[in-house]
Length: 583
Image (tube, rainbow, N blue to C red; front, side):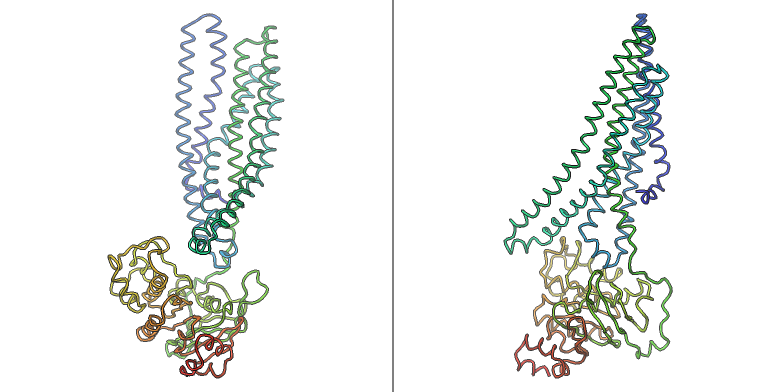
């Protein structure tokens, strides 16, 4: 939690003023029993109505001043807590954006969502409660004890016995419940994960008629969460009854002891009433303190989870120095992309995903990448934009190691169309401008034309102003893929990577797309990752991946003759005559 205190630095005034006004309210509240004692001992005893009215006016004034102080304190506390939550969310979101794929894979999307929403809300509530009650409640408890000793030392000994018992109960329950609340949040992560998977995969679940299975799985997860919450709740619920019992025994002891001392003439009736009122104040404040402790317990558990994310350092550190390109780069003799003895293994994996990769790709070449499922195709091309770092060896772009590039400069060179077509809610035009913020309408239409998307976009109501819903569910799979390709093309990158991004296209559209790419962006170095041999057969160079290693590099004709893996892929997708026809 202490790591997150820095998010209150812009709210120092509110952080000081909130508890200060609460302390003022507490001071006025501590005077109330003394005023009541005077009303009983002087006003009622002497039947002095004017004195009673005067003291009643003082009580009313104390109540009004206390109310103003309480409202002011609440305003400052709320402002500080809301500002704290905003800055923490902003920083957490920015930090997550800086994390590499490795850290995101390790944490899991559902956990990150829970920590940014539920956990931050709990911390925010905890901050609000602390600013309001952290000083006020202990101040009133200690103040009531001090005032009781000023009234009568012997009767006040009851307070000296009751208070340590209450502190023992309150802090004992707090230390028991803190680790349990962390388990509650972990189980909430699981519920969030199942919910997210069900919402994202609703069509698949219904297609396979697995609704009942998913309901049962969700029911099991929520039941586990409920059981843990009930268990923690039972422990926390002990706080109020136990404190009530201790306080009520204390009040009973006070009344008994005070009655004897009134009878002996040692104290007055009003002073006994004041002592009972102070004991009642302690009860009320300890109930508030119990609520504060429960909120703080949750907040601390959530703060530790959020801190765990914020403390994670991105595994990818980018250079801030300008890139020192080779002097002969402009002559076109230096490979646009080069892999030098590259090995890569995912975190936690015992086996490398790719190993011993040596490839040179010259500027303007069209490179096809093919291989079986899990052969390392996507892993290979993900090293170019530095989504991951090679475990061994180097990946170079324009003769410079990708690790020496500033992030913006490296990403500006590269356009990527991932396997899964991802579009965002908004207009088609807005999505196209992800590739280039200041893209003109002509540039957008040119990119749509290259991606074979212009025809269907023109048919949409409003054209490029057509609004996509969440996840672009109002488009077909092929339409989404073509818009994703157009989004990358409008950027006019030096390197364009299509990671199996035409799988939903028919053969005619796929062929037209490849032709447009080769003719209209001929200066761009193009990587086409595909499961179809027909999609890459006309590439300048084809890289065949097999079990994480390069099984062959060459043209379609050469690989058919010399690469068994490639030949098997081609023959599995076409007849022998068709394969020969490609030669």
